[in-house]
Structure formats: structure tokens, C-alpha cells
Image 1 (cartoon, one colour):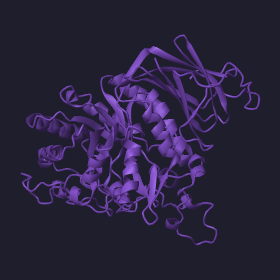
Image 2 (cartoon, rainbow, N blue to C red):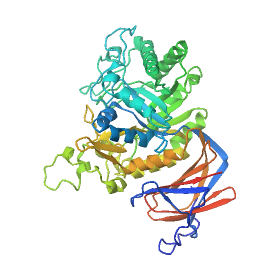
Image 3 (cartoon, rainbow, N blue to C red):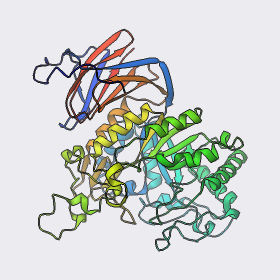
Amino acid sequence: MFALIVLLSCSRQSAPAPTPTPAAVRVYLTSSAGDQMREMGVSEATPAATIAILSDQKRQVFYGVGGSLTQASAAALAELSPQKRRAVLDAYFGENGARYGLSRTHIASSDFSESTYTYAPEADPSLSGFSIEADRKNGLLALIKDARAAPGADFDLIASPWTAPPWMKDNNQFYDTSARRGGTLLEEHIETFANYLVAYIEAYRAEGIPIWAITPVNEPQGNGGSWESMDMSPVQQRSVVSAISTAFQAASLDTRVLIFDQNRKEMDQYTSVILGDPTVAPAVFGTAVHWYNSTFRVYEDVLDAQHAKYPDKVIIQSEGTADSLANPASCEGVCLSPPCGCEEMYIWWQNDPWYWQKDATDWGWDWANDREVDHPKYAPAMRYARDLVVGTGHWLSGWVDWNIVLNKRGGPNHVRNFCLAPVLVDGETDTVYYTPIFYVLQQFSRFSRPGGVVVGAAVEGPDGLEATAIENPDGSTAVHVFNDSGAAVVYQVQLGDRTIGAEIPNAALQTIVISP
């Protein structure tokens, strides 16, 4: 970020009305004022900020934006009429929707399943009884197939196990709340677990669903035994990756491996051990990360450092959401006659302004010791927009949200770990609510296509103005601008010998699509 060297001298009142946009340029806006990917004109007002697109600074290949296909999403969508369900999937994956390029799903059950289950319940190392029939019965298979069937759908799927079958673990449980641990994979079952993942990939392939990448386990540092989990140290994950590589080669699978799959701040603990091993590193495509260290920090320094150490390995955001919606902070200002139950409040349901207000909550606000530093209340839509723009500018090669759809309570969830989703539904009234988060993700995804290349973007303007740029395979350049400066900003984009003026209000994501 360069320092601001010109004053914001043009107020919204004095700026002339936006002029029609040239045919080769399109401008879209999603904002706290209620804009939902609204197309707008360019501006001829005197700019107070400049965003220079540095096309000669080619950075990472971009694999797309996406959301996760979970059994909870399948259950929530099943409550809708067939027409509404189809419309939601088209809005995410269809050619006239967000056109998601990535997705993620869970291997056997997760917290966002209606119950715990595994594909190999019997303690049989040969895995002779392996079956994904549970996913057929619970709707997950149908959800993934129907997403792939959306007109124009074309996305890659990442799959992650939350745990190995319990009999492969030292505690013989999916998770243990009393001991606050998920259990650890037994050494004698490392190869068995690798074969379990092979069996999953082959079973899904037989259903017409290719698995583009897997992670060895979701959140190897654990979740305090709160739901399905499996603790896996960096050294043990290195052994698991080695076994997966051997098993994949034997089965002639080209599925990629993404290591770690937890919060960015701690990623070096795993990459230094796994990617630092020259015998194992070639088996790894990159690192999967989450965003739960903070409600607002992107950890640019961590991402930059990882790319500098391992420039040939991608970094993909594999999960992020606003979570712990059952906590009392979610009910502030709503419960007028205490005592009130948070579960009946649904403050987020069909409430667009709430998503742009900095009074939302997640687990960090209620539980983390460093909540005043890294976990202030932060507006959900702002959090998504900031992370997409800043993270992509600091080497994220893809960005995958958590559940694509939940019910208005933030579930179903068999451990009451309720969360937000970009689309919320009410089956009783057949109502679908596309939250502001959906439009933030749609805008970024629709104009940032898989196979594009991130290029340099130098911002000279007020603190809180951020930008990133992606050159798409069709030759267009998408410039995404996020404004959290506290005021509207008139700025200009410089791309080669072209200059494009625009004005972005505060609390907004703006995208300028420049055709070649």
C-alpha cells in the first residue's frame, strides 16, 4: 500500500453524475446501501486515489471461488420445493449465476451432517465392506450431482475427511468431548487410511464425480473434541502424505494433495516439516488454509512468507464462515424481554443491513483470549470481501466458502455448531434468502475465472482501500476493489495506456471488468 499523496477533495455531492460505461468496460457494485452486483457507470470526477494494474507482474494461477457441498446443505435444500432448490444450485453453479469454479465436500460425516457415519464401520483393514451408500441415503451424492448438472456448471471438487473410521484411531471414537480430543490415527492404520481415501475417490468416480484434490484431514490441530476430528501432528501428517502418495500411484489416481487444512497463522508448523522434506514435497500440490485466527486479519505476512519459501506450491482457502451463532452476542439488541433463547432470534434472517454492520459475532469473540486484538466483532459481508480481495493479492490461488446453504437457524448440525451460509432457507414457507455474502461471492467469482492469472495491483489512496486484479483466460481483466476507509472514494484504474474512473462508496466491493 502506498501512502495517500492527494486529499479526498471531491465529495459525493460535488462529483458529477456517473457517465455511461464504454462497451469494453463494465462496473459492478455490491454494497451496504443495498446494491447487489448492480451494474453502474464510470466516473469522470477528479480522482483522489489510483490503482495501477501491473500486468508485467504475473503472480499465481487462479483456480476460482467456491462453496462447500455438505450433507447439511443437502438437508436444508431438501426442505424446499424442487423449483426453489434448482434455482439455488443454478445461482451458485450455473452459467448465469456465480459460476463457482471450486467446491469442497466432506469424506464421511462432519459437524455439518445430521448424524455421524463412516464408510467403513467394521474393523476390517481390507476395507471389504467399504460403501458410500450413506451419502446416497442422506442426499449428499444427489446434491453434488445436481450441482454438476446446473447449466454451464464446471467446477473442481476438494474432499476432506474430518476423521478416519473410529477403529483406526487410538480412542476408537469419532470424537471425545470429555477428553476434549478427536483421537489420533494409529500407526498401524496409516496405510489403511490411505487405502480408505483411494476407495472413496474410486467410489465417487464410479458415480461420475471426479475428486480434484483431497486433504489428509480437516483441522489436524483439532477442535477440542467438539465434533468429528482427528489430531495429526506435522510429523504424522508427513507419514500419511507419503502413504497417500504410494496408494494413489498404485491406483493410478491423479488426485492432488493439499496439506494442513487449518488456520493460516499456524501453517508453517506443517509446511516446514512436510514441504521441507524433499522426499515428500513432490507429492504435495499445495496447502489448504482456513481463516479462523481472526475476524478481520488476512495474515498477508504469513501468506507472503509461505509463497517465498515454497513458490511452486499453491495456497488455497478451503474453509471460512461466520460461526457459533448460538452464542449470546448474536442476540444483542433483539431480546427485549429476557430471558430469551438465542435459538429463536435469527437476527440474521432476511436482515441485509446486519451483514454490513460491525456487530456480528463468531467463536473468537466469545471464547478466544485475544479477542480484543484479533477477534473484534466484524461485519460478515465486509469480512468476506476483505479476505477475497486481500487474500488473492497475497498468493491465495483459490477461495472456498463453507456450506453453500443452511436453514435460517444455521443448520442442521448434529452438534449444534450453527453457522451462517450465503444462502439461508425456510422450508416451512419455501423461502430462500440470498444474503449480502452471496452477492459478494457471486461478484468476485463471476468475473474471476479459473485459469486466470493474478497480476500486481498498486494502490495509492486512503487506508482501507484495497484492490486485486486477475487476467482471465478470455483476455479480460477483473479489478476487484474493496473500500473500508469510512468514506466514498473516487479513484482511477490505470491499465497500460487506459485510464478508467470510478467511485466506490464505503463498505462496498466494486469490480471493474476491462475487455481486451
